[in-house]
Length: 217
Image 1: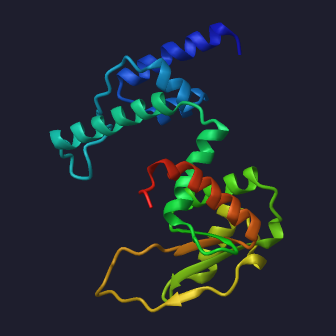
Image 2: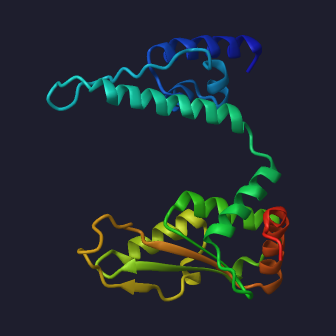
Image 3: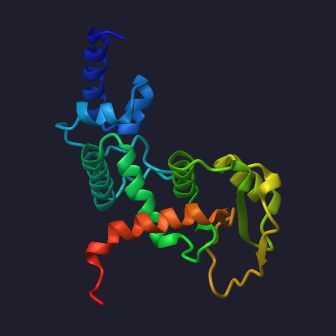
């Protein structure tokens, strides 16, 4: 697409932003990346104007509108700050993820999380940063007994691109509604990769990042 097309899209983006469209809505409407939209409309103040008034026609509370505006401003700032991820950016982010959520015992990498996006990011990094053997990947689920195991297995298999044949027996916990009511319907997935060398390399990278902050002795 030529510069003229980009100019037209940029002008349309400004118009839509002034009408309180979100960055993602504009990107979807114009068929461009959200990052481009963020740059184009960064000087346009975002004031949410809900397109409906709810089931009973009530006007949204001003505090709620202000909250939405603040969230959107934070997103714009974040998009401008982060920009396009470099391989090093991804390295540092995933090392931090593993330092917080990964197994430290030598022998295998194990990363557990209920958030499929974080799990996908970690596994994409593992696949890209190391020459791994896909057949050695395992995904083990922690899922309450009253939840649908087949549905959970299929969800995580599709999300992580790991065959169901590589899902070992899950851990099925008894639900205790006196403890919590907000449960993850797909459970918690632990990504496992049995390779002593890969685990050692990851832990060495984490140590390289954290060693300047280590306490003496």
